[in-house]
Length: 469
Image (cartoon, rainbow, N blue to C red):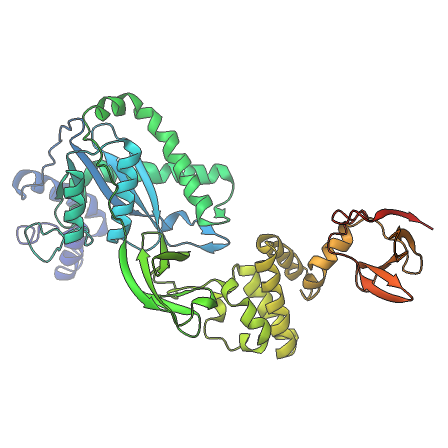
């Protein structure tokens, strides 16, 4: 049996013998059989694969590969992020570069990561080696068949392209071993950090860069020697994007490469030229850059939508009840706390009140830069079992101004805030939370230049003070 199927295990052979000869081969014979099988393979078994160690010369070879980072359980804004790392290594010095990728092994991710690495290293190796990436090679053919874009990239940088055989990862050994060590270093750094949640992608990318920068100085001497043998960089970086076109629908959205994006409503019905990079999109109208956004993901757990709630706030303020049945409602919540808040409001309020309250909270987060702070406040209220309807009132600009302004006199008391020419006085209206001019009993709003200390910075004909009378 071993001659026809050399990979059979000893425990499998023992089970077969026990079925064929009941009672003759007890379980205690397992260790003996394992030794006999091992001895047979050493004396008469098939030949094993031999690994040939390679001597790497400085400046000759650079290696690119992607490694899956899901097992590190990194989160961004409280949500798990399905991502990979593009990893570049110079074979001689083991100098390395890493780049966060959220949309799989695409040409855009490969080209962006490679160009970033080359320009950071200050030169190009003579060969660029990858595993059998579909972005670079058409694997259905036995011979190497570069895609046109990858071939153009290699020619521009004066590199020859090579790749290892399909499903033979050890042929890209320098990159594969570096993957393991880099992932361990990032995992250890996350443990020291105390948590694995980042506020945004930029924060996580900065964290990864810092880990890599701490590793590279160990190979500084070898890298300095290798840099002498690297080719010079070309005068221009070349393109690391692809161009597409998309028309903005009346919903304020457009679709590129199977992912739905949103834009400001003023671009509705316009046709945009879209440059798709590895991590973001740039949208052009008549040659002018009109919008940029992070690139969406094709991950299995993704809804393939990349929508910005800020683009819909003004329209939702006019039609708040549309929020409940909105097809992409769940994609508008910027953080998990907002989604949970909506569930609480929907369960305890009528539809109209729940929609108005949720739209008001999103407006507050969008227009006043308090998205993260408001999310923390909502989390606190939800944990305490309270209804989050009061947050909008206490966080409104008027309430914040009233809390931060100096102590105001009672509404019935006037202040010596007088225009010497018209003899008009001012009173503080608690109902309006503002200073109001009074003439013959009629209130008039104070000028916009009136400051909280009572001094009119923009009108020289006023001599003002806040001494109560």
